[in-house]
Image 1 (cartoon, rainbow, N blue to C red):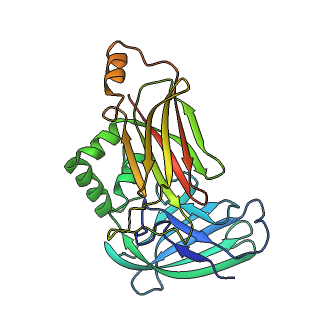
Image 2: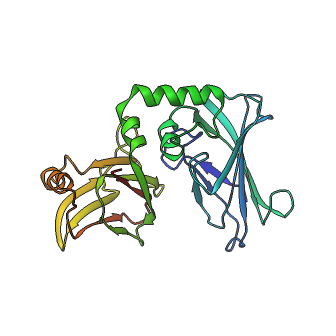
Length: 274
């Protein structure tokens, strides 16, 4: 019963701040207290460079080291290349790692990047380089200073609305000023592959974001990529939002709903104004 280790989006790398998907063939529901552990191995394929774990009985599971609060991650002394291929060894434990029965294990070679997840780490840890090596902390700082999106995201408060799928849409009332909405696709059916050279665009709509004023649809945005930042200030609501915020108020009766295609899972975040 090997563990299958993949990136949620085909062709994308794994690494710090980036999601990794672990799936076990273990028969039956996982026990409460089950723990997933996985290690990123150095080029010798034996020495552990980065270790991570998460206590959850979800199967499959998608997790991001140094971003998700449910993940405990730690760098060790052995170095990883900045880009390339890395071997990952994963284990599924009945309870505490090493002190309980191992239910499953697996090994996989995946594309790796130490920098592609910097933006997500900035959002999760805006005031520090927590969990980063000195070199990665410097890269994070340089990336933040070099590009305005990181500055913008870093200055806004991110509110995580949670994970949704085809059976569980995500909805929320927008009762305070919101700059934008971020939708991240975390997984999709194996038969649903992207159709462009960059492997990051689906002709089929993966999710739909709708902003309502009362019962009327004010804005509707289809999601065709692995992530999408929807700027509410430039996509049809700019005048209304500007008037409301400048007058020290906020538009009443605004709400949002995100519906996902069957078999697709994703995360939704609100970019709240400070």
